[in-house]
Length: 158
Image 1 (cartoon, rainbow, N blue to C red):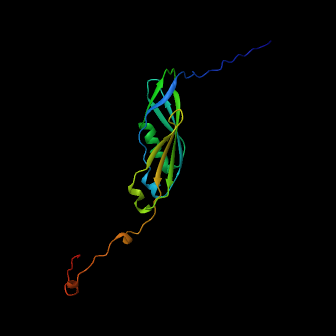
Image 2 (tube, helix red, strand yellow):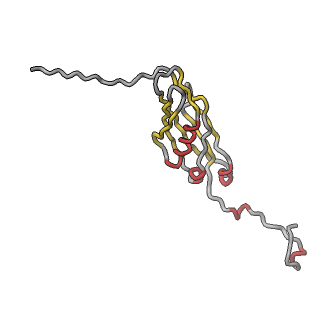
Image 3 (cartoon, helix red, strand yellow):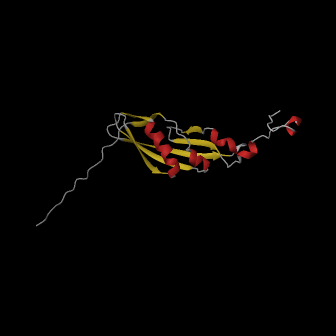
């Protein structure tokens, strides 16, 4: 007796159409990562449904940087034109630091955001200035006293 087994392989529905980024939510360089001079890439994959809803998932990246990248991807708007099924879109957030003249003031300045892409916005670079540990005592000016202060207890700056 000959038994024939036929298997039907389930095929995933093909995505017909294109997924595009409509509006990027501005990412921020996390303060703690900036203070610790942490740099690196964070890869986020977004699944976009035909009606436009999106779900972002972290693929890889530094834990201190990934929360900012995920928040940006989740608040961004995507569009799936002529899609019959869910479409995929990947974003790479590159967190970089550059040297500056005044590293003590680096934390008070916001990071520059650059979008590097040829055909679609897939690479987002955040460029911030390197920070350093600064002694606040070096920035305090000493008060100048007048000659009257030699004899008086309470002196004002002159």
